[in-house]
Length: 187
Image (spheres, rainbow, N blue to C red):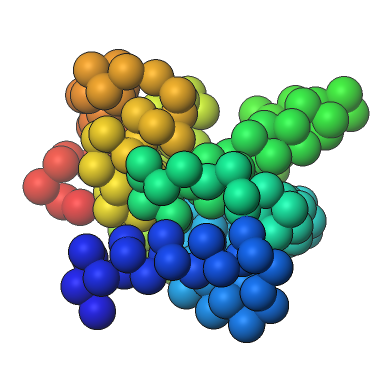
């Protein structure tokens, strides 16, 4: 399925979901679940919380499908919902502990030496050193393949803000990798 076909399919499915079509909802879920789940796991760093927010996201999609205007890709709309619900969940959790404490615990967790040395782990560790707004924009652009206008819509910021966040995020990522003794060419 081409990108354009996927976009049209998402729009048609959301329109059917707005009419409370259960089969369309299941198909939309199957089509978008993996990307939304991956986004939430990266954003929240807590698999249990990511699952809870995922359920809330698709509940909201079911209830609010009629509000989708079709100006963006359906996946962009759904990730925007998940992002908002994710931040709401983080605000609730911060009453008990800071996000940095969780990130540090995960980064220094129970990995063996081989895992610590892997490129994937080093990149993940470097990403965790970035501010949340920079991690988020890199995740949406590079891991979810969203365009700058789509990211701007999800984040509710101008496209130029997305461009500058990507620029500064890449710069900070390279510096974080450098502090770990890794050159850009080594990744």
